Amino acid sequence: MNVITAPVPSPGVRRSRADGEGSLQVHLDQSVKIGNAKVFAVYGKGGIGKSTTSSNLSVAFSKLGKKVLQIGCDPKHDSTFTLTKRLVPTVIDVLETVDFHPEEVRTEDFVYTGYNGVLCIEAGGPPAGTGCGGYVVGQTVKLLKEHHLLEDADVVIFDVLGDVVCGGFAAPLQHADRALIVTANDFDSIFAMNRIVAAILAKSKNYAVRIGGVIANRSAATDQIDRFNERVGLKTMAHLPDLDVIRRSRLKKSTLFEMDESPEVLAVQREYLRLAASLWAGTDPLIVEPLRDRDIFDLLGFD
Image (cartoon, rainbow, N blue to C red; front, side, top):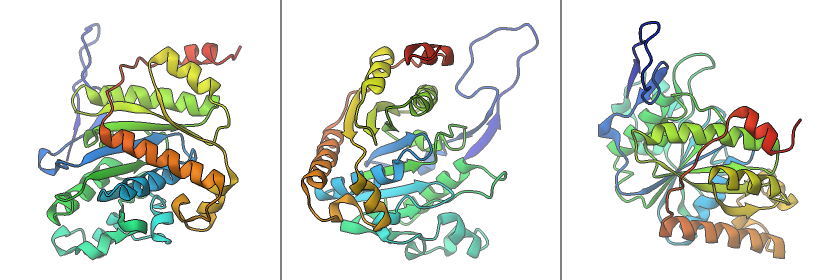
């Protein structure tokens, strides 16, 4: 992956701006394209439940008979925690042990089999204030290709850090077919979603990624989400209510597909299976126009 900075025009000169112009950007090395798998990047506000959503969606795909890779892209490396029942070493951890000589890395050093056969990888991240998250994602995909782990994959899910949408942590968008946004029915989550929409649109100028839709999470109602979606052109693909069993599944290091069956657990399982089937069948890209910050305040009732 290459890091470049765009030239700055002379004072008084106005012209159109390319994707990422004026900022530090990480660009995709064409040799590390993923291939034939369907690739989804899951974004959303920090703490909104992206890892829980990603892990249960991975299991749902596996229940449909698909070979699934889940790649956690967060320095705290807990994306696959409920799948593997532990915090697994990250790609960066492993590379550090071999002085960053990737040819010395074995598959079993960084790939772990989770519940129902889901393959789990934690990319990790650079130390705080140093390095680039985009480099980490690029090295992870490169290792997966070198070890031929992407050739048979049907689905790849990137679970991406918080609402950080800089050039580095937008890197999974360069690999993805569809970006999914997890949100709750509150202002802060929707504000973050609006910024993520803008980042996805910026990347879509140069890459194949398109917005797939919204996953409403931890919300009894969806009125605020619905209002925002209608205004900008988004669509809710799944609704997961704020259930205590979801919180308890995390504490038990389990996906929802491993919890004792109750009517509410079965309902959530069905929703994940329905979402996975819908994504596998293919979704039309959404034509979306993000709002200005002030307009979000006005739309959602703030004075």
